Length: 337
Image (cartoon, rainbow, N blue to C red):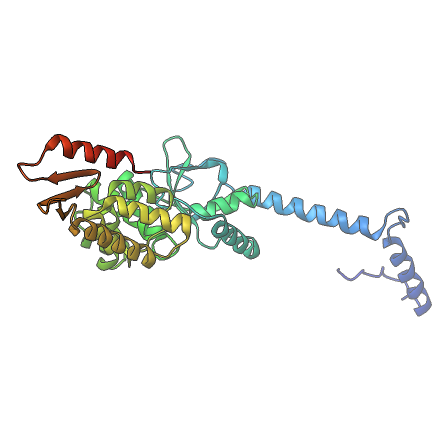
């Protein structure tokens, strides 16, 4: 505050006059007392004002409509309303996420108070944004009631979008080997990436990992269909044994998967069950399907009897009275309880 100039010819005020002047100025700055307002009321009003300021700042940061101008710097992170993001199940590699997994992710984001890794999207013709990677983060933000989310916008056709969706998840989330294999197969089928080695290089994964995950697609069709709804039942380390078993016993592989899901047995136990069942069936096939025994008739002559399941055959002497033999056999059968 600039120093007040004393008019020429006016004496300097005394100490008593200065003290009196300071008291008058201080008193004039004190607002009138409002005894009807409590401290809680003041704090509450202050909190509401702070919340309103934060909301206003957040709303200002959101783009009103995604356009080419607003997102000219492609690849840089920005913020977009959740209402503008569209989820396409055909692109998403994840088939299922347990409630526990999603709850843990949502809790970690809530504790942090922010999403540190933007979700991956591409701009659609209608101005909306199609989600490519980060569905779990997107769902967590929605569950927390957030109105916006950090995004990273890229340009991609359908084939490239599928590649980027897997690449975004590679190494960051707990995609199952079956989910990866299913998406790898879709990418290769489009022909944009020619072979497994090129795909591994593009994704930053090892060739062995890509090959192992693709092995899931060699399972019997019914087994693949079952894994579509239970993608975490079998891991990549066991898949080769299930594929081998499925080549000759596809029904047993499906039954083994059902045992893992319904009975809670391990993958190793399921493979042992398949092996034992195959062995038991083989032993049954090797065992004789009939038995023959020698008979001695009352007059000492020889005969034989052969049993096949529910059929009994008799080989009798040529000169035997067949009518008498038939009557004896009939009475014997009728006497069976």
